[in-house]
Image (cartoon, rainbow, N blue to C red; front, side, top):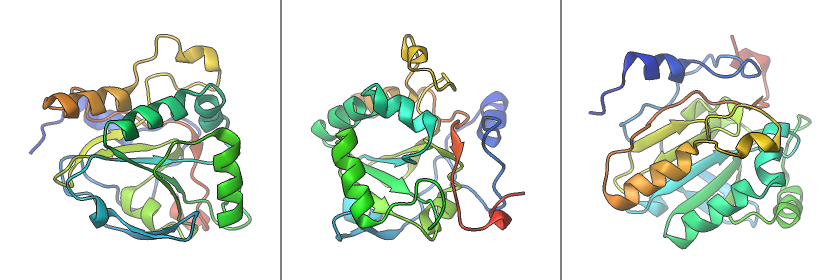
Length: 211
């Protein structure tokens, strides 16, 4: 069982002002990550269980979100993906935007976006029905989760501690995901296992997803 300080527990329940509170339960730190199956941008079926024994990073994204845009426009996200994958992690970028909502990916749009930004993700998962997003309580783009080789969530929250769209804010930022991956690689407990996610609201199909 991973102990969470009161301050971190409060942070977990909070998001930036652009992220409404979800009306469905989120995944739990230290618990087994919710299983899922989805089709990726290349038409392959992917299941979380396929990657048991490996570190898995989940990244919610939206091509129209300036917060995600900050990390992709600067190359920050791609560099983090490349390093993680090179060190043996599986990186799954997920789009939970519903049809006709900002950031919705068809397979063709997802592949074109991948080429445009130069993503190094292992796969881009298409979750237009929001099943994976709801299972994890994904609130924002980006919203990040790190899952260890035993299938347990060891990090959840924002990518870093700078909830701004200005690329200049990346200078000196504390990258929680990079640090969590380094801790796992070194066999240490993750020092900062939870933070407040920030970014644009995930564009689920129904407003009843929020309260």
